[in-house]
Length: 278
Ligand code: FAD
Image 1 (cartoon, rainbow, N blue to C red):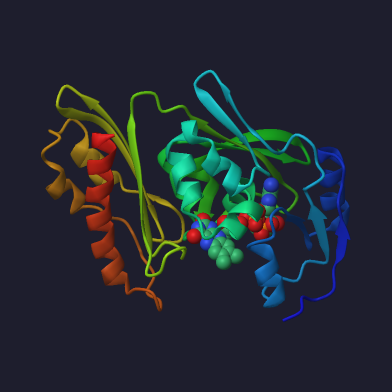
Image 2 (cartoon, rainbow, N blue to C red):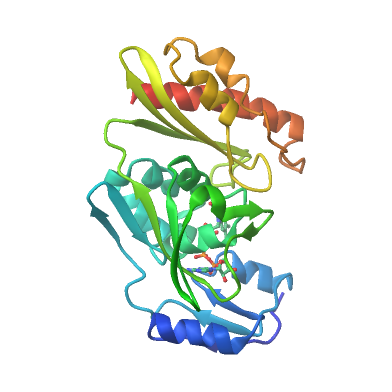
């Protein structure tokens, strides 16, 4: 279908983008890679009166490391994230998103801001206890990823906010894994699991686990994390059985909620095994 009519601007600075959002009112929307927003507009599920395209705003694209922190510009394409192998878990998850066309247009900032619980990068950023840097009309603020995703396509962003950067810690000696289950190659995750583990002397010193598509937001599998902390590396199976605690997976044409619960238990075990082995 053809989208409803809209105005379009491509500001040359962040200040201009913020001004365009302010002056454009509630119906103004940012445009990044367009791979979530444009399909919604074509289906007329979204009808913004103004699109504020971020592609000419300098300083929003690129990946750099500062000490123990990776700083990823919001307009960095999935393909560029996937190519930065030192990013580990984030790069691997980005490489599993859709097909090359989507990865060369879609951006990490767009994926985070869109807040789709079936997306891969929000889960990974939550597992890593990352941070989202946001510029709003009142200046800059940094939001922990755990507080950012608030509901079904609902985030801590206001309508006049711009995500400018995603920060994640450098993993050091921790192991990691992202397990994505799809019915067909290049699909969205039926269920996904991100795991980050730290071993200490035959024991699991720490485990962070987050789930994709097991509820309205990325969900930390706290019951599994608690069961694994201090446990022997051989005692994964009973902990993985707790994977669906506190989740509310959807039923749709890809899977029933019950099947998703089963997948979560299987994938958590695989993810932790792979993370510990890495
Ligand atoms: P856009 O579509 O431009 O914007 C999305 C939303 O975020 C809009 O509301 C926009 O206003 C807002 N926004 C964008 N940038 C900012 C910003 N910097 N600050 C504040 N708000 C902003 N994703 C996956 O994770 N896994 C998949 O397997 C997957 N498969 C896909 C398959 C297909 C066929 C398609 C079309 C998409 C798929 N995606 C998948 C989604 C893809 O990753 C999108 O690119 C991503 O979700 C949105 O990024 P974008 O840059 O395209 O954002």
